[in-house]
Image 1 (cartoon, rainbow over the protein chains, first blue to last red):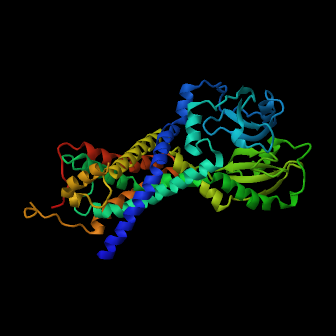
Image 2: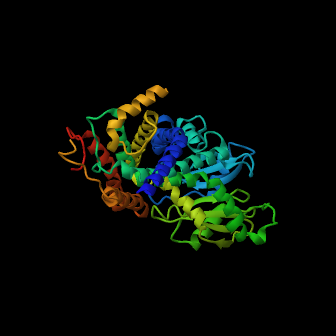
Image 3: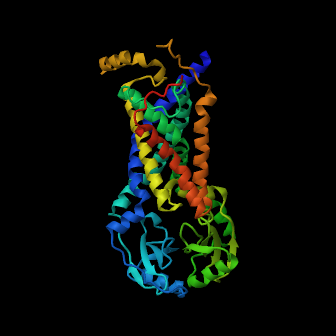
Length: 387
Length: 70
């Protein structure tokens, strides 16, 4: 028992310090993450967009080369990085364009086009939008990769705080029933109960959302590893070739890819020289039909000179992990009811953080308060003397 | 007071029984919407709503106080 209580002290210490360091950032992440759950709805509400024409089912799609050409028509000097199928609206396509091929795609502009007529719809500047500012704060605090990795580290501390929280939950609950809320007791007891209850019932959700968030902060690195790993391997014999002078048809490349994988649908095409392809290939990323396989993309590499399929492989486990961790972090994979539940769980997480912060400010020893309630008065006095 | 009802100490298993079940249900809820649509989404909503309902119940339950085991 003696060793038990000393190891408990260590866990309390871990819980306290991991929480103290990450709480301010976790609060920021919970607050900025809340509107991001509904970013589609918020954008629709706040910003006008040109809608693609409604067409009868079975209307043939436009030639993709024309879609890309029209996408570049209003921005001379720009180059196309990616051609993207809109997941939410089959009538719309998007072309992601940048100033040069090696410019960071994070600075790209999305041009929206009509998928059937290839007509240019619009290319809204999203950088001033509320959702964009929330997204930047949430992902990197406007500090690019260092910001991402820093928030990832805060996320790891959050996970440590959750796991150590499970350990210190036990002594706190020795004499209490599950779900105890002592409403007639002082606030410090009531908030401890709220902290314990909401913390323990949300434990799995917080761990999953917290850790998948951490994985997302590594996205840039994962893509780099893939580029220099699998992608380099798949395109090894083309390594020293320059960009194709007269690239083959994009439309034909997508058709070749879809013939190779008739069960799958195209998600996006990365053009030669962009981060998701080699200098000499169209990388057609195909997706499956269930919510899970829709995330697990499969690249088919089409030689952009000859138009033939040169290789197609499943993505390696580390990219697959990243792709699966995205929906689990965003909560966007189960319709509006799941988004609403996600939002409520986010709000309860804020309650866990705020009550935890309050408990730390009120008293120095987070050990079993329920068992030592009479001591509260003395510890309160000590706190007052200290302040 | 302690002579009237001395609170018993619960074992670790007693403390963590319900949280373990809730953790498993959360995992199933998180994964189910990922594997399919329709009924799988519904299952996910149901299972992930459980923690929300438990919190609401504990805070809003009228009159109840304590929660000490006897």
